[in-house]
Image (cartoon, rainbow, N blue to C red; front, side, top):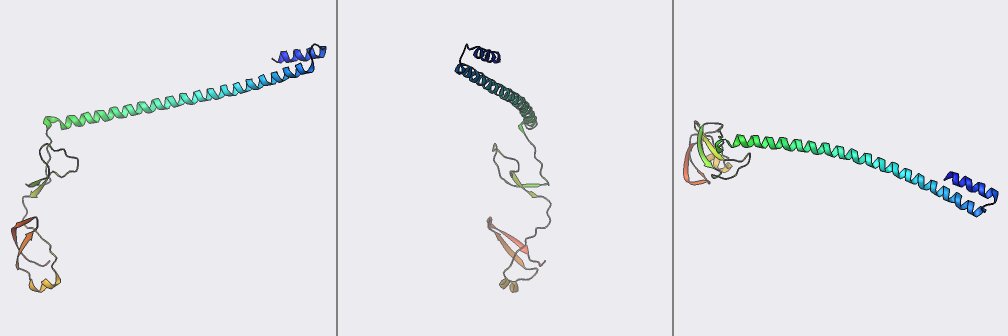
Length: 168
């Protein structure tokens, strides 16, 4: 392209072309140079974008591999838990102390979650129960240590509990 421009200058000096034709050729040369620089810059941007995309692909591939590994570990843990809980379909839960079952909170076949209350156990070897009561001030002169009292509990209104009063 540069050779063509130099040839046109030579042609003008010989009188073969006029100044307008030379100016057009010079403008065309600089326009082509500008286009070349533009394409060069765009090519560099594209190469940079390709490098960025390849890096993202490698990062995402590593992330996916990591997620697959974690899910595989979770699957194995769940299989292990299934094997542990599926032994004869039963799970034995031991109470913290000996006693009798007072009430059940669940029914057979009901789904339960960790931490759910299943039943209440009344300890077997309790010698004394203590009940702490707050008595109104106007009733204090009428009671004394050793008095027998009749206690009624709203949950069991038909039952009467006898107790001996003591001050503590």
